[in-house]
Length: 165
Image (cartoon, rainbow, N blue to C red):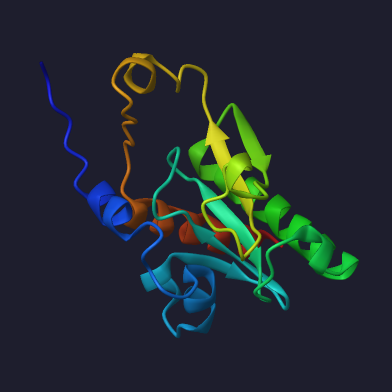
């Protein structure tokens, strides 16, 4: 039997439901975007890489306000969040060239929400064939690029796109 080591997952397993506070709020307050993998900030929302991604390039858009439900967010903020989703999708599309995207919101634990009290939108790039025997048979996902690498590539592509506009 072959083993695939993913030691960074242990941090998530050990800290799940034990970490005080909110990592979205912590990232928002931090002076270091790179440390928290914050990719973009708008007036009322921001985008960051998921530290425990389902797929390479998996990121999230969250409101600045700590709220747990869409019904607590104004239409203006929801619109700003969707605009940021679009910008992120465009940038990811430029440098990762995925064949598609899963974009969605999980509200409530039974819906798959890992963070119950700070609503956020997931943006997950997908490629033909990115689901294979590993997740089905071995309950394991292989990610081919580090978070630092994805962060640097995203920021480089963002800078190139901003120069074009």
